[in-house]
Amino acid sequence: MAKKTIIINPLDNVAVALCDLKKGEKHEGVTLIEDITKGHKFALKPIKTGEHIIKYGNPIAYATADIAAGGHVHTHNVHTNLKGELEYTYNKVPTDLKPVKSRKVNVYERTNGDVGIRNELWVIPTVGCVNGQAKLIVETFKEKYGTEGYDGVFTYTHPYGCSQLGDDHERTKLILQKIVRHPNAGGVLVLGLGCENNQMSAFKASLGPVDENRIKFLVCQEVEDEIESGVEKLHEIAEVIKHDKRVEKDISCLKVGLKCGGSDGLSGITANPLVGRFSDYIVAAGGTTVLSEVPEMFGAEQLLMNRAKDEATFKKVVKLINEFKEYFIRNGQEVYENPSPGNKAGGITTLEDKSLGCTQKSGSGPVEDVVFDDGYVTHKGLNLLNGPGNDMCAVTNIAAAGCHLVLFTTGRGTPFGGFVPTLKIATNSDLAKNKANWIDFNAGAVLESDFDTQLEKLIDLVVETANGKPAKNELNHTKEIAIFKTGVTL
Image: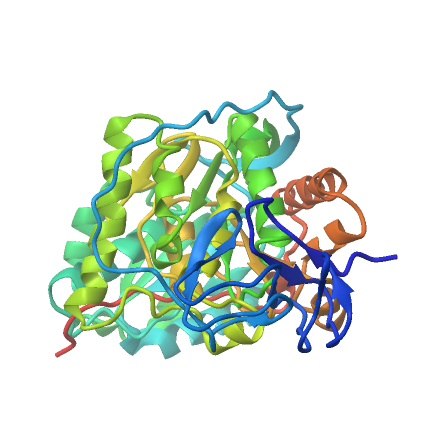
């Protein structure tokens, strides 16, 4: 008989429904006094007004009214405990990981020492004005030459590159430069207009030295027919990259991003802790994982801080958290205004509730480094990355920082994919069944099976993806970028 409820931590005063429950049923020693929807919480004992709601062994809210045992615990009767910037104390906890059996993957070696899991040909516009030309160059090239010998031809369009000021302008340029240098691309054509703020000369100067056989540049206003010129340059690059071959490497060469979107009440019970176990596995094997979505650390940040490898890293985590809170406050927004309507419908009540589930994707290993806007992931192990929770922006940031693929957990489902393989991991079996065209892996199976069994299957999937198996977002031709914007547009 399938389990119907779960108490996540012995300290919890709520349980979570793993399926729809009816009023009058008895679960976890209490009789339900109202219907409880799958993913939602019910009280295990009477909870007084002002008392903490405990889930994952930590407070996720306080009660705004008396809640009887067996009563529904959700947004109607609780409120967040979160406030603005805080002072934090470093209380280091043990983070030793057990040795693991490593695996092999077949990847493309790049001349700078990086590896890629795809050998694709990309067109990257420096400005949104040439998005149409970029698409036409790709379409014309594929009609004329096809894609034989490499893993596809793509363009990643965006609306920026002009009329931006300050940080926004610099962030746009930097994100695009990171994409141009990404090792999943065998070669790139950078396409400009000519009169934009994001001038090609400045772009090239700060990009630094490149392999001119693999990265080429074209300014549309400087040629008579930009489509013909673009196709010709792409063909020159293609003739180089089609000779690239996969070679066997240890799985420790991989950098894997950790992301969740459209979370539900099972995210912190199935998919996120499973991904956390994967993070511990690949870190123990000598690899790298990256956790971003800073607003979805709010409420769980002290747990991450306590896992910092040293005092200097702890201070970086504090800077990461408080600077993002400053961004909220600067724009007149509450730091706790995060769970979306879909999150709430799925059973997530407060940002602490979401964050304590979200951060489980990081596993239990030490935080090795914190990466800010201008950096790449350079440290092996678990890294934290600056950036918002928005799915498209977060996946773009994670991939641009150097990740080869992203593990994306979801309880509500989304077809979105980034410019690297974006593996969708369902929190529940219903979603995996109903949206099989979106979902790559069903973490809901841990409720019928166990974490160890499903972890091995997830490792298998990551190895297969690194070896070239397309993710669902790749099969669906859903590969997009979004650049985080914070300032003024002229």
